[in-house]
Length: 100
Image 1: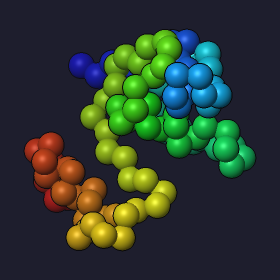
Image 2: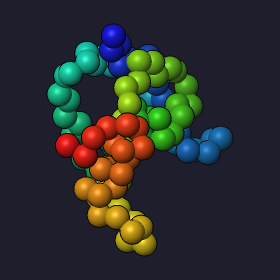
Image 3: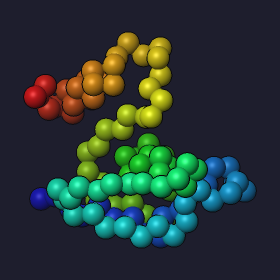
Image 4: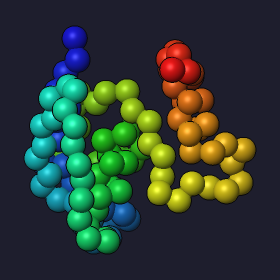
């Protein structure tokens, strides 16, 4: 049974006294829901996605019900021996998914 992804009072800042990138995020996403994240540059979209994917930890609050995720950064490192599609296929195989 898949659980709802929940962010309860989630905040993230970089460094002990750095500015808050996100603060007080409350979000519930039902399994199978399609969500679009949009906003201007510097508004915390990538930080939010990194928290949901489990790449970064929240500075405050809680993330629960996190599904298996894969995250491909906007700037894919050119030194990696993968294209973005090959990277996702590889991550899927690591987690037991078929190539399809």
